[in-house]
Image (cartoon, rainbow, N blue to C red; front, top):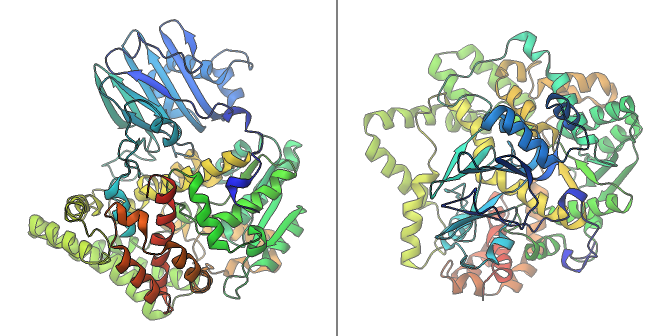
Length: 610
């Protein structure tokens, strides 16, 4: 693979052919001044707009008594006519949907429940403009192209306090499961979908409901299979193996072509899963591209190729392996694949967060706490000290201590937490005093609730939906996939699957004394020779550290004194260069933080740096 900017652009996906759309809506009269720059489905006083991919069309057409050649926009308008705003929460797919109701004088623009399709907006004095990327918004009159200095500085501190914010000062994000409402000269934003009512105790599923998990996951995979030839990013982990197995079975049942297995091989004994990847593909009867991660990138270093992708994205590249995965996807695209499924979301929704320990200690459920420790010890390659430090202290006793301090002296405790958070920032970030003060003010927004109403376990589950990095990762995949004519879909992030796993009791998720019990035992029976019932989580940490030590010096030399970031006052260029140079002499986990400034400098250069 060569750099993305030099690639021949693949034929765009049919539903994404007009992806540079901009939807301008008047703040005062959104229904009377309907923009003609996008195609609307008009039904009386209701107009509908749809962009993306709509699942379950046949069932939706049947429920609305319309023919199957009805457009997606018309289906949405009909659904709104019949069910009002509540109908939007029942839509499934990867999409942006808009409704303009002339009778009510209101416009509603929504992003799909889990945010697999991007949605951004910018506001001028007279209107709000929506788009699926910041780029077309920045080309509109009255929209500033200035970068968001505070967001850039916070990113270097590994802090993302404003989930709606982007790296452009004038552009903001509509969050997954949220909608924008334009009416009466105002713009409002509200959540329309969540797995469980916020602020209320989780209503845990009963055994008969949990028994439907296989049916719900099968349906999620079916939704991903019906859009032309498909592939599956197949690692050696339980998440992608489970999706590959289900997709193979469902394709055979539905008379569809089998997915193509796409696997990266990591040349490091601690994360080399190629024998397992090949064995799974062989057992399922799948064709497979099993490619060394460096070979997938092609000429040039892996990190250099990944950094080069920043010219194509609306935010700094998040995934350091992105160039390799993109190269693998291009191989599949040349063989006709249009949709690639992943196991993304499995870690978030099949796994019990260790913060359950805080809830268990609080309830005095020490037997369950011991079982949780045993499960974590069997499922991860942690030594006993690391397990105690992480699960007992960080995720157990420390949150409870913070809760007690919060209740005793909330103001002083908040100030203390903020100062401790800021104390960890690199000394070379934000030499500009004004910018540093902005960071100080924003830091409070990054503090997690000390007294979450649904408990610490639920607090961490909600972060899997609301965290900035969740949206950012999906937006990155969408942008790069669109560029090469591939759509990425993730069955484990299907709203129905998320809604079910969110409410599945932790003991069920850890069934069998190991994480991901809902799929682990089934896979162990399906692949009896692979010992999946005893598999531990594989991490590529050491490979990543060695890669940075090997390829980092060249990136650092190219960055020099970080002129783009320095010109914006985001870093002290010379101090940053010295810190990078010193950091690349040492091994250990701290080296991983060197990636952010090297990557960000390249992005700023491409998007407004000097």
